[in-house]
Each structure stands twice: as structure tokens, then as C-alpha cells.
Length: 345
Ligand SMILES: NC(=O)c1ccc[n+]([C@@H]2O[C@H](COP(=O)([O-])OP(=O)(O)OC[C@H]3O[C@@H](n4cnc5c(N)ncnc54)[C@H](O)[C@@H]3O)[C@@H](O)[C@H]2O)c1
Ligand SMILES: [Zn+2]
Ligand SMILES: [Zn+2]
Image (tube, rainbow, N blue to C red; front, side, top):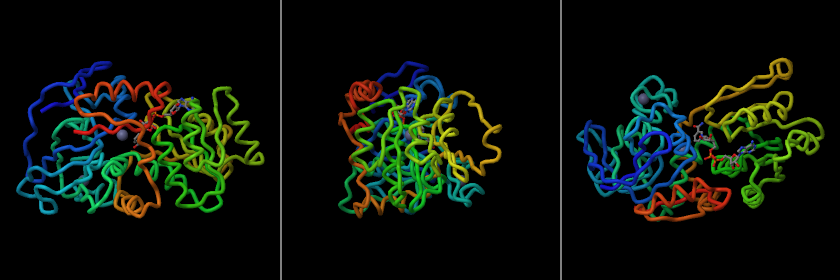
């Protein structure tokens, strides 16, 4: 089969690979019909993710059709259309029983990281019963690709951790796919203000169309002042970090209101400063999380009911054979205005 393979920092090829086979009773082999590329795949290609070894097929998002199942799989059968979660969960270990699938002792974020991923014609999914979701009849499969990772990530790590509530003020730093997924799902709770901050005017325009009440281009280094003006000098109840660099974590510390939450989503590759000399008295909380994807079934219902329309995040479509073009389009997002690219196998 054809697959996109990571060969060490800066190196990837689209090449022939052996088709995956059932290894454990709980496995399913899924024929991929649609996948996509995540900002985290770019982190891997930069060498930021040491758990991902050269030779690995990338990708942790997608939908497909079950081809074969292991002897222990009871929920799915060959021919079933399925949504693949970026997080693999056994459902039984102590972490899974707490709903913390991200830390499953035999799963977690392994797809396209510790085991071969979804940017291929076929993928092996361990713990298939508890890591795949059935696709409802008539569902729009392109929209569902957004449920593998970005919608649960924005919702769980940003909106739920940020305690977004009716009337609250929210700032989302970073208007990439994750920041925009956070923006879409924050509106479940009717916050009074949702301020999007980024360096890219195109992404800020998209944020405005997706329901941001204010957008700020932080290129001038004055975003914190602008947030203070917008909030009457108070700051925001939820400062959600969706970039993953020291400058944006710093900005969140500068704009969080007393009693507020800094909800970190970004994958950080270097240390950041924590200004406890200012924050110790401010009654704030800081949260971090690797997405658990426990909210995927709920989010699926909101997509089915059209409460949210994640298809609006899709800007480009490619055939699997053109996945290298898809990467180059996604990597040059400022020039290509790419958000999510759909790759059809
Ligand atoms: N916690 C999790 O489980 C989890 C899951 C998925 C992704 N992530 C992480 O979330 C982050 C966002 O993902 P994405 O796919 O949206 O990434 P992305 O790179 O597409 O978006 C990041 C955005 O940040 C903006 N940006 C960069 N520097 C900035 C600055 N100094 N000030 C303001 N904006 C700035 C960019 O213009 C871009 O729009 C990444 O770090 C990704 O790895 C975390
Ligand atoms: Zn991802
Ligand atoms: Zn587990």
C-alpha cells in the first residue's frame, strides 16, 4: 500500500509500505477513505516529538471502512464505516476508567507517533471497540474528520478546562484549526466576548466569520493592552493558549482576570516563564491536557444536528497520491490560507 513516512527531521516520503495485519485480538484494520494533516504532524517533522521514530507512517485523524477485525472485536464488523479517534483507549486500565484515555497504559496518543498512522491506504487500530466510533447513516464524512482530533481538543483542553460559561469573557490565542475549533465549541456556552488573537489576518478574518466578537493582530506586541481596553481593564475569565510557544503563554498570563483560568492547549517544545510574582494573589488556575476524546460522541451529535459546522474549516482537498502537495500547502498556510486539508484515499 502507499503511505506517508517520516524519515527523521525535515524528511518524509510517499512510498510503498506493507499493508498492516491484525496483531492482537482487539485490532481492526481500517481502509482509510479520508484523512488530514495536523499541526502536530509538522511538530514531528521539525523533530519536536522524540517518541515518533524514523520509519513511522504519520497521521492520527481520519475516517474509513473496517476491512478485517481481530477475534476479540465485538462492536464493529467488516464493512462498517468508522471515525478514528486520535487517542487509542483500552477502556479498562485505571486511567481509562477515569475517562483519561490520553494516558491509557496500552494506548493514548500512539497513532502516527508510536505506531503507524492514518496517512495511508490502511491502518491498524488497536483496542478497536473503544477507539473507533460508528458513523451514523447519512453523515458528512468530511465534517467527521474534524472529530478525530481538533474538535475534542479545542473543546476539552480549551472550553471545558477554561470553564467558559454564559456571559464570560474568553480570549483564544492562536487562530489555527485548534483555536478555531475552540471558538466554534466555546459558543455552546454563550460567552459574552470571544477575542481571537493571531499574527495572520486571513485567519483572524475567518475567526470573525466563525463568531469571534473581536480579533487582534498581535504583530505589534500590544495585544495585552488591546485586551485590557476591550475588557474595561479587567482581563479575560478564560485565556486559552492554542499556539505552543513562550510568547503566547506569556500573553495569557498578561490578560487573565482575577479568578480566571489559563487553559493551555499548545504543544510546547521549550520552557516558559511563570510570573508567580504577579499571579500568586490573582486566584487563577492553570490547566494542561493531552486531549482525552471523551467528548467525541457528544460532539458527533452537535455536528449531526448542525449546531456546529466543522466543515467550514476545510480549505483544500487532495488525492492521497498528492499528499506531498497537501503537506506543502498546509506548511505554507500564511501564503495558501490553508486551515484543514482533506486527503481522499
Ligand atoms: N493538547 C493537545 O492534546 C493538542 C492536540 C492537538 C494539537 N495541539 C497543539 O495545539 C497547537 C495549535 O494547533 P494548530 O493545528 O491550530 O496549529 P497551527 O500552527 O495551525 O496554528 C497556530 C496559530 O498560531 C499563530 N501564531 C504563531 N505565533 C503566534 C504569536 N506569537 N502570537 C499569536 N499567534 C501566533 C499562527 O499564525 C497560527 O495561526 C499546536 O501546538 C498543536 O501541536 C495540542
Ligand atoms: Zn493532531
Ligand atoms: Zn486504557
